[in-house]
Length: 443
Image 1: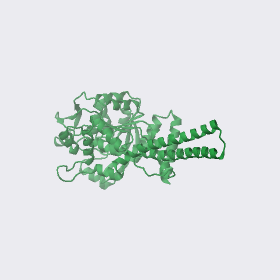
Image 2: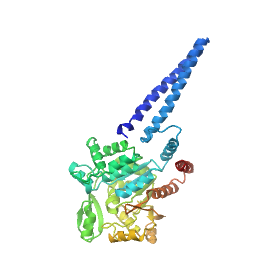
Image 3: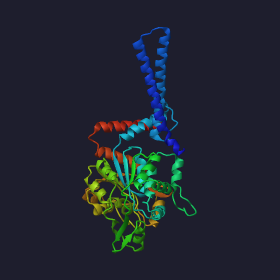
Image 4: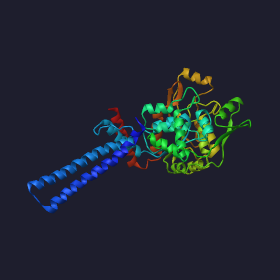
């Protein structure tokens, strides 16, 4: 599909509105002429009938064709659906369902956040992803150094997770060059870098890319300031740079005591703060504890908003420990570290995995000093954090990941139960539409 195709439905809508207006004028003119002149010869009656019939026909065509264009404009990828197709019925129900979904703010970065967003977009369009911009490694780090822009990698992944794109487009944007000066660079990163070049700031570039890819919800950087992530190891060493922190922790055989950002007074996006304060739910993680989740909360305005909001606050625990960051950590250790950095009022519930993996795969992870994250329920009770359990394990390319569908399902169920229980009418309508959508998709 050509990019220009995404803009054609908007032009067509205006065309059909104008045609519909013409049809209405025909009908009005015919009725007024019939009433005022009262010429009832066969000639005039035929003229009035022709005028009114033509108006009705033009109005009918404009409405039906206009509906096609509106649906195409909304979905940006279904330009050739017919009005009596099952696909169109699904789309209508899906849009009605999504706009009634809870307001969710997801905070984090890395692979974990984008995986979770991929599942959540099927339940609500009221999603705001607030993404870390502390990354300084790989292709993102190169662009950050060469162009002076904020790192695009995590934001690119979140945009693609929430996008309504053709598979080929997603494959293209995730493609990494294998040779030459662009080796290991992602085309999606370059796309976002180009958007940054023609925009007034990085926030606008992200917004433009989201518009082109028909993103469900919003994706935004946590700050537009050029922040640097630093860590103090337990041996007293200060490590600078997100990508260097786990490497130095392993090299010096010293775990992370705390992380901090410079400048310390980095300003959060106003839109991000507003989204947190208006949210039904705040979700932290999943993702690297010290380099993806906590850095967002070190931006003062974000931490203050998370503490103040009346939203239900959930932390999605990682399935496996991460070498150099969370060696030997249990779920309770992850939460204690978050509390240590930003206070005790940022997590109400923790979503933990209780699924198992086969011995062979577990053995491969153990060889890399990575283990299933354990849980001490008594410690979590002391922290006043409630537990939500589920089997969220899926294996992709030999790597353990969260199952986006299962994770999203239990998150939505929890949010609707804990936050929106008082609005029974909204819940009934939401789940009615959800069930109808599932039925239509299964036909």
